[in-house]
Picture (spheres, rainbow, N blue to C red):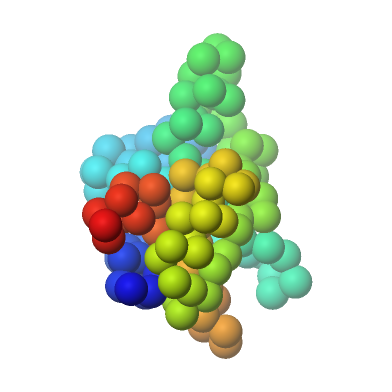
Length: 124
């Protein structure tokens, strides 16, 4: 089984200048825990914003989600793997890097999917 077999293909993306309040509303609406942060240019890495980022870096610290921008707290660079990566290798990589999700990047197309720890578990 490959990364392409377990990845989520319906991605929700966000720009760096969006507010965390907007991100929270999208996460609730789509029932997801992360969004892909678009690159401002091709030489910049992709980023990721998670529910954990919103809670720990904004809400728990008393910041106003309507004032904090995604670009201020996003995790960057987001880690990418090829769609051809074996799921066992994805699991090892995630364990070694202490990651809860990885982006699936296709050369020439950018981010084409995302895989979480839960996705990896479902494969077994």
